[in-house]
Amino acid sequence: MKKLRLLFVLLLVTSVITAREYHVSLNGSDKNDGSASMPYRTISAAAQVAQPGDIIIVHAGTYRERITPPRGGTSDDARIIYQTAAGEKVEVKGSEVINNWTKFSKDVWKVTIPNTFFGIYNPYKDLIAGDWFSDTGKRQPHTGEVYLNGKSLFESNTLEGVLDPKPITRSKDQEGSTYTWYCESDEVNTYIYANFHNNDPNRELVEINVRRACFYPEKTGCNYITIRGFHMSQAATQWAPPTAEQVGLIGTNWSKGWIIENNVIRNSKCSGITLGKYGDKWDNTSANSAEGYVKTVERALENGWNKETIGHHIVRNNTIFDCEQTGICGSLGAAFSQITNNHIYNIWTKRLFSGAEIAGIKIHASIDVLIKNNRIHNAGRGLWMDWMAQGTHITSNLCYDNTTDDLFCEVDHGPYLIDNNLFLSEIGFMDMSEGGTLVHNLFTGKVTRAPDRRTTPYHKPHSTEVLGLKEIVGGDTRFYNNIFVAGYSPIPVPENTTNARRQRLGYGLDIYNDAELPMQVNGNVYYKGAKPYNKETYYIEQQGSDPQIKLVEEGESVYLYITLDKSYKSLKSTLITTQMLGKAMIPDLAFENPDGSPLKIDTDYFGKKRNEKKPSAGPFENPAAGKQLRLKVW
Image (cartoon, rainbow, N blue to C red):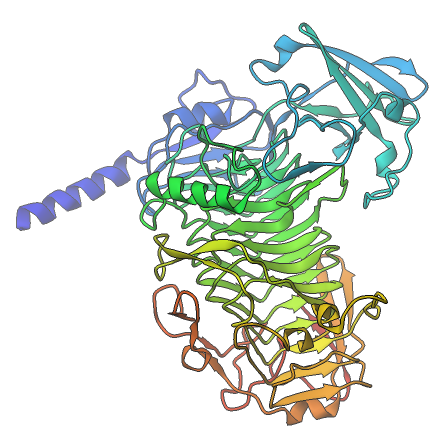
């Protein structure tokens, strides 16, 4: 036993001694040894030699390369860490500068690029495609992109759309949509035409996508990698459906234990960060069907999808914007992960294409995933938990100005928990699931209920192992201690629509009056016309009271203004615990923490301790009633 202990100590000391610090600088050379005095020129050179426990420190400048790590670490204590030097700005770009444009017509310029310039991958020949992708034009868009001084132009379906551009009405950027580009390719060259308006592209910074990613391993199983402090942008990412390999500007490629933190990520043609599925010969062969995705899940289980080998990533403190599919997505590979304190915005703003995989955060199989303290706005859809949200915990997020909805739970059997969130968009919650709990949230928008008869999996507790498949019928949902406000326009009622059908969309919870599975609803507050559930016992309904909710952005901060009437204080409410919630019916599982311990919702949006005998409804504990509050919510 003593010999074994001595051997362990020696191995530990040896690993500490052999761990190295590699430096990368634009003034370096890849023939150097990577020391502080003789740094490498490229991050890729350091990646090739780094071993578990090593740190790669990158110094200021713009690095135009794709980092393809050949290996990862061996444990959380023996990671390979990629980080920027303290106080220095490092950019990694998937683009190259193009400055040999020739005038074509008026504001339109043309460049001819030999196909050899792109090597084995030409984004101007690669069309965006995949399961659940929808093209809105006459031809599919490409993964390539053109940027003028850091801002991406709009791809046109035709050369005419570059010569005489018109604003795209569906786009969130009307003015920007008249800055257009178009491409053609033959066997020898690629030709790009772009309308730069009054700008001379040879005098401005003009860049084009040339690489599929900025940081992405080619092989699976590159575990325990940290990426910290970078600005990464301009990658020719492909559509990332749940049935195929998901390549993001940064992506984990079916690995375990990554930490992606304190980065600025922007201008991905599709997705910013992917925590998703590996690629195989069945990619994009699902026929866009639920049955096809069930087969994807079965193959993933055969390919090592389990708690020991996949997921457990931490994605925190990143700023992610200007991506046209997702800020963060992951199919199966995001299980057991934590996504916290990220600012995600301007997702799907061009709207040159669409599909069923677009959101600020889009996760398939969010098993034991924590999504906390994120700010998500102008993202089309804010949060989308699609299939197998089991043990999922979504808490203290700020969602607003999302045009589709703030939260969509699709064909999940639960148990999942949604608490202490601010859902402030016109549609706050789209429910196509069962077995969920929503408590202490603030909704100013509509709630939509659409039971779906698809047959989807449920699992053993805190595991990927499938116990069975069951049809979604709706209900078995718990709503406690929420605030609902009819904060937008009245709900239109078509003349020939039945009352039962109308109630699938409403302010409040009356749309659940005919839910098929039993509901648990109590302790909610309804303002300005929001309606309670018909079997709710303890609630406050103040039809004529307007809390005058307003959200104001001031620099990097966000403030919420709200006025609660004095009757708010009279509400009879209950502390939310594992015991009082019971079990989600279909999986027969309790609402509990990932380690199996009982949960208790005893803090509010700010982390303030709740009154355990009479907790306040909504995200904020014991707010003053009868006067306007100004709360810093980000």
